[in-house]
Amino acid sequence: MDLRSNFRAIMDYEPHDHMPVWYFGTWEETKARWSQEGLAGIALTGDAGPDVPGMDADWELGMWDLHGLMNPGPISRSPREVLEEGETHRVVRTELGAVIKESKAGASIPQHLQEALAPTREGWVRFKQYLDPADPARRAPDWEERVAALNARQRVTTILGGSLYGWPRDWLGTEHISLLCYDDPALFEEIIDFTANHFMHVCAPLLREVSFDFVYFFEDCCGSSGPLFSPATYRRYYAKYYRRMLDFYRGLGVKRILIDSDGDMEPLIPCWLDSGFDILFPIEVGTWRADPVRLRRKFGKSLRMMGGVDKHIIPMGEQAIREHLLPLRAVTDEGGFIPFPDHRIPPNCTLAQFETYVRVFDEVFNSLP
Image (cartoon, rainbow, N blue to C red):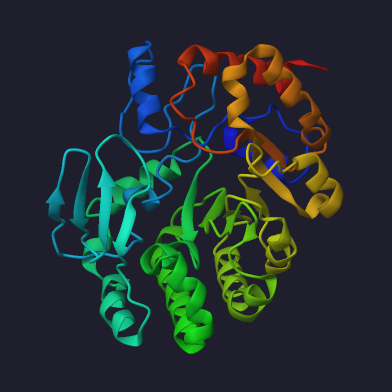
C-alpha cells in the first residue's frame, strides 16, 4: 500500500499498512540546530520539514503556495520598506501596507503598528485589488511540468483551499475583525464572501488537473480560553460560505477537508462537523490539554483528527514519550486519527531527542501488537 492509499485507508476507517511518522515542521532555529548536530540536506528557511530518518515523506511540503502552481495570497507590486532600524528591531512597511515592528533576535510574531486592511469600506476597496484571481502573476509559467510532477508523486499531498477568518484576521488585526461584525456586518460578510470566491477561483484550475488527498483550511480562530468568535457568529456569518466551498471542492473530487485552528477549539467542533469538515488539526495538547481520546468519545467517528501529541514531551526522554503515546492507541486502533506533534518543534529539542521520538513512535504504533 503506497503512502496515499495508506492515508486514505486510515481516514476511511479501513485496514492500513502503518501509522505515518509525521510532524508539522519546525522553527527555523530548530533547523539550524539540527544542521549543526549532523542532519544533512536541510533547507534552513520555512516551516515545513526537514524529514528526519525514519519519518514518512512530509505531507505539508508545497501546501501554502499550491505547490508553486498558483499564488493564492494577496499580490502587491509595492516594495517592502524599512522605516526605522535599531540594534534589536526594525520597523517595516510591508508590501500590503501594514506597519510592523520585527525583532532581529530570531523568529517571533511581529508587533503590528498599523494593519494592512483598515476596517472601512474604503480600506476594503483599496485592499481587495491585491486579491484579483485573474492576475497573471498568480499562475506559474511552468504549469504543465509542475502538474506532471504532482501527478507522478507518491507522498500524501494537500493544498491551502481556504481561510475565511485566519487571513482576514491577519489583514485586519484581531481587534478590528472582532469588532467589524458588530460595527459593519455587511462589510464583514462581504469580506468573507469575496475571500471564499477568491480561493475557489484560484484553486479550481489546479484541482481539475491534480488529485489531492485533502484540502487544508487555515483559520487559527481559537485561543487559550476558547474561540475568538462565538458559535452563533459562526452560524450567522461563516457556515453558508464554508458549506459552499466544501461542496465545491468535493465536486472537484476531493474527499477529505481539514480545518486548522490552534487553541481551545472544542466549542466550534459541532459547527465544523455540521459544515462538513472531516479532519481537525492540530488538537493542541501542551497548553490547552486537549485529549484526542476524550474528543473521539464525545463526537464519535465523524470526528477525524491529526495531531494531538504534546511536542513538549519530546525532550523529556523515551519513557515520557512512550507513556504519552500509548493511550492514543485507543483512537489509532479505531482509525480516523494520525497522531503527531501539535505544532512546530521548537529549538530546545535536540536532533537526538527527536530521533528518539521517531523510534518510540514507530514502536508504539507500528511494532506493538
